[in-house]
Each structure stands twice: as C-alpha cells, then as structure tokens.
Length: 366
Image 1 (tube, helix red, strand yellow):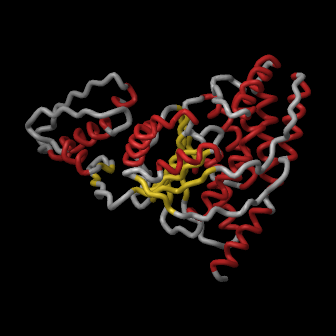
Image 2 (tube, one colour):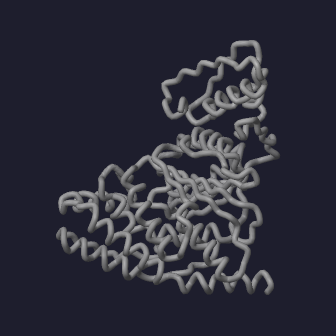
Image 3 (tube, helix red, strand yellow):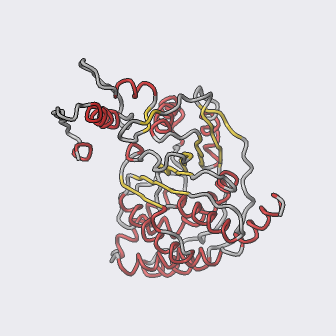
C-alpha cells in the first residue's frame, strides 16, 4: 500500500465514525444532565453566557453547567477541527508523542488524538504512542471533559490513561514522561481580539512554556477573524511557520444525536436557538509553528528532569549562595529538586547531607 492510498484508507475509515462520535458525545451530555442536578435557572444562565461566545464576545467559564453547554454546542466541532489539524502531524510518526494541551476545556484535543490513533490501528497503519496532558483554569470545563473522555473510551475501546487533565495554568503541565518522546504544544482558541498590543508578551510566555515541556513545535488554532494574530506569532523572533496541509473535512451537517439532547434541554428551560450544533461551521486559522534554530540539548540529572544549559549550571551543587529568579512556570522548583538530588548523589556514604528546603508552595515541598 503506497502512502497516498494509505491516507485515503484512513480518511475513509474516519468518515464512517461520525455517528459513533456523535453518540459518544450525546451519551456524555445525557449523563451530565441526569447526574449533575443543574437547576433550570443555572441552565438558562449558562445558555445566555454561551451565546456571548457565539456573538464573538468573551465567554465566562465560571458557571457550573458551562461545560455541558460547551459540549452540546462546540465539542464535536472542535474535535473535528483538531482531527484535521493533527492528522498530518501524528500520522506515521515513529517516536512516542506527548501532546501538551493548554486550555484543554472539554478535551477536544485528547478526543482527536485518540480518534486518529484508533483509526490508524484500524487501517493497519503505524500508530505512535500518544499521551495527552491537559490543563485548564475552569473546573467546570474539566468536569465535563472527564465525562466526555470516559464516554469516548467506552465507544472506541481507548486506554483511559492516555489522557490526564488538571486544573491550573500552563505551569501545571509536566515534562514528557518518556525520554524519547517528542513534544507538541496545542493552543486552541486562546487568543482574544484584544491581544494585539500584547503579542510580544504572549510570544515570551509561549516560548517559556515550550521550553518547560521540551517541545519544538506548537499548533495554534483560532477563529478566522484572529488569523492575523496567529500569523504574527509565526513571524516572531522565536517561531517560524511550517506548511502543513490539514485533512479535508470529514463530517458535515448537524450533529444529530447531540442536537436531540440539546433541543430537549432547551425545551425544558424555555429557550430557543436558531442554530443547531454542527460538525463544521467555519474554517479556523490553523498554524503549526517550529522553534527557530537548534536548541541546546537537555541535561538529565539524577532526578531524571530535563534541564537547559542555564538550569543545569544552577542545579550543580557548589559552595556558594545562589539566587534563582524567574517567572511562574519557568522551572525554579525543578531546579531546586534537581540540586537536592545531586547533593544527595554526590554525598559520601558515611556523611549523609542535611538539607533544609522551605517553600510556600506545598506541592513543591511534597
């Protein structure tokens, strides 16, 4: 089988999975409606909040049922977009891949990665070992994401352990779990229309984040109206754009089973919507960025933490006082842990070291 026919085979199999994915999402939404006990007033308020997003405004993610509404309206659409964007990146790669999903929300990136891996195996193509680590600041989006992920795992017979999501900002992401794993950062729909004046700062933090997780590539997705922001990031001092041709659209029309659940909820709370949830509404801005130049190789010490050259120098024990200054998520705690590990490793067997570490960060102390 040549490469082109193999891709056609994969595309054909993916097209046949639309109804199963629709049912998996609908089943998760039915579970949330049944088990979470949302009041009619809460559902109405969250519906009104979601319409702000539909009208191009910022969405507040602090309503308890916002994850359910997002799943009923956008989850499958986002999953479809990410399947198309990730297909040319993940297909036929040999090394394991750790995907760091920043602002993971309801877990569309994890769904897309699992769907592609399952389709590759089903089409007798090599499927890389993919592990997705997500972080989001909204506990309500994460709660919905966990229900959705469980539903997908049952539908596709996916290992639940291939996706982990935690509450927090990007600094909560951990380095790759496997030494030979490639790192890919996914940032989807994070940019706001008001970010024009902050692109330098955004570039700085995206680069620091990529350094933290040892990722050379970053996938940025945004609405078409914010395409200029994505392009400007791809023309920065740190990143360059990589030409990647997304998969063609796989599913079209209404997500019928999700629409039935959503319309039943709207009837219950006395709301009407002129639009049904769909697989494909607009073509988002999708860019793959690669770090400029060759990066300094990481150095692994006894704690098996990957450090860059500067961090490695500071982590080396020395008879001196050292001040380590850095922003949140820049790796200060990792360097301290590595330095402690090296002090212990280099100590004489009959003279165990006495080490005092104090911190306001209790997880770091643990």
